[in-house]
Figure: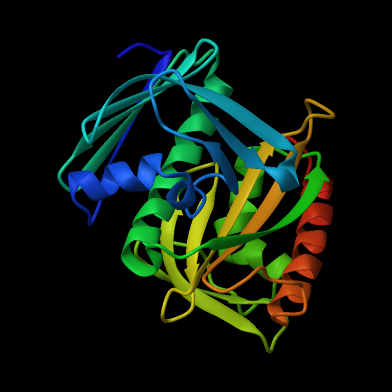
Length: 263
């Protein structure tokens, strides 16, 4: 494998046919990957993936497919190939241009496949509703990850009672304000990048903490917290008191990261 290629593999609780459905039906794709998916998977057709909160849209051409075996999507020089097997999905990304893109792509797919497993296990065939909290800050992905995971750093922008984030499968607990606590399991923890957490004893939602390159400046990152919930209709900020607390928390985090610098 060359430096321009990246292979991610995940064992999943689903048959080859079910994995194909989850990765090719726009309804299912919107439940674990992009926030909005348009188009269809057919040779020569185009899929449109959108993240409205980020103002990002990607057009993918269906270049090759063998049902329930292989799917190749193309976006310019970048290709994404899905290889399907029983209880296993491989994603091969080719045409990566630089190391930062490689690391970001790797982290993105680690979180996406963790979301896919969560969806297949807990919420299959339910609609997902994503709430984004975004802030810009002059920082790095490495420093941000420290504030996402280290107990002392978390205690500064949440509360000192908050424990650190450990390995995949371990439990965690975020104390948002001394009274409101969210807890669950670590679904993904990519070193120096991003994390994905389940929320609630019944895994009813997920919370992702990530950074993205800023479209405004090379020396800053976009800090993103994404709260995903399944089932029912669209959610408003009044649906849960945690919404205002998460918004206040990311305000504190953005300010702290800005003061921490970008080294």
